[in-house]
Amino acid sequence: MPAHKSDMVPLAVSRVLVLDFPIGRKTAIPYTQRGDGPKCLVFIHGIFGSRGDFDAMLTPPSEWTFITLDRPGHGSSPFIDGPEDFEHTVLSDAELIRMFCEKLNIERSYFFGMSYGGSVVLTLAILFPELVAGCALQGAQEDGAELIQHSRGIHLFAKLLLEHRRSFALKALSFYYRKRCAQVEWSEESLKLFYGLMMNPHEYVLLRAMPNLTRLCALNIRHTNKAVAAENLISIIELKLSDGLRNIKAPCIVIDGEHPHPALQSANRIVTKLSDNVPKEICILPDVGHLASFFAHEEIRRRVIQFFERHTM
Image 1: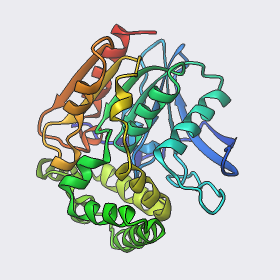
Image 2: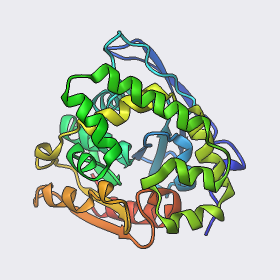
Image 3: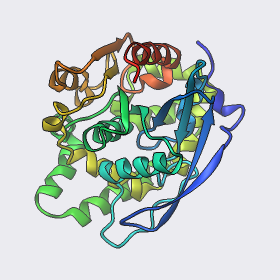
């Protein structure tokens, strides 16, 4: 299996965009761009991720431009210093990605979202259909109810939200993340404990043979703002996109591993809820689970580009 490149040479920043976010203040978004083709594919990472997550995928075919960015509070991007009640959510990130594309004069683009990033892509496709030419969704969540049902820890925070104890839920989750992250070392065993239900046994074996990926994940965890991560997860718990999926007009390829935790098994639900009038495809990869983009990057990249080429804008 090819090594993940990010450990050897840090992913170079092509440029840093400064965005005037409507409900916050200015924020800086570092991004990496490869290729100069007319078809654009924007990669959006998950919670405790960074643009480096997609380094192994950033070899665009001719006619394509690939762009990957650090979401606020992740990688090299600072959190948004907004008003007191501002939260970093799926909705705020979708609006930020729209502004990011506008700033780069991208009128229409394909999007690849991993985990939380996939939920951002779904939101983009629902709210800004004119921008979205196609969606690639790997491990995306469309409804927080499934997470609540299958995860005892998530159920606890959902209960606090239902009791209108939002501030306490955010502070408690942020404290939990800070405590967990302080224990993370640059080792496979440490990451296995950190990722918990997100990593299956086969992925753990793969990780042991990929020191570059181990270091990348450890750096991602270290550089993520823990309060932002808490706000991101709370927004996933509260997510209710199911009814909006039928309104998506863009072609969608839904990707997942064969063995994700039950709380994260969303691929079939999403495909079923998409309109039959929309080109759609499901891609289930053997052995891997929710972190499929880390371990099957070449296969995912090939299938995504093939799907988009068949359904080009």
